[in-house]
Image 1 (cartoon, helix red, strand yellow):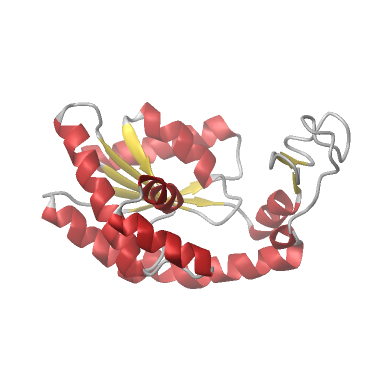
Image 2: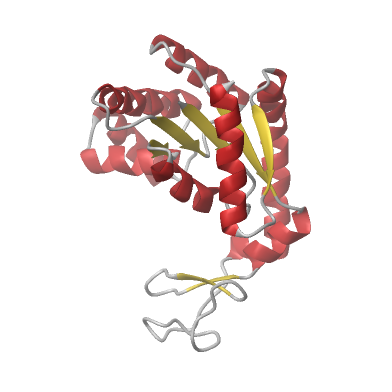
Length: 224
């Protein structure tokens, strides 16, 4: 079973991936985690990633796809041992090229994408969620003014440091990021929708309600 989660920043995609993956015995695959693991292992691909990271450049699709293939080969071994049922892709693919590459990688393993879940949240709610984030400059703990505030307003519970708002969490910066998300993902959504794989879930609900809706959508797809 191979499931893709899609959703704009602030949609709760990462939160849901962390809940759904263990519940369905899926290995969560997020490219950021894959990059960091490769760097830590100092593998041949990891060394290439670190060089690009150190330059501050984006990781090219060719290298990203190679790392994903490598990770999926490991996951396939775990599946054959009965430890896993499949993979949950969190934030990958991001482009049409990556989606086509993923199809090829899975086909080489005799596998395919089973379902794509897009978590939808109204734009203004996304902005409110993201703009409410505050970060401790010392320990990096993330708070939210409404959903997860510190005990003392504006002060980190752990370090006592004054919390800050990151530059990319201001409303204008968030709007630009969301516009970029729309631009990149619109072709992907159309690609999967045309194949009958796309399921849309209302993410502007309690976490448990969203989780149940996602699992219901996946169950309907993989059992039909």
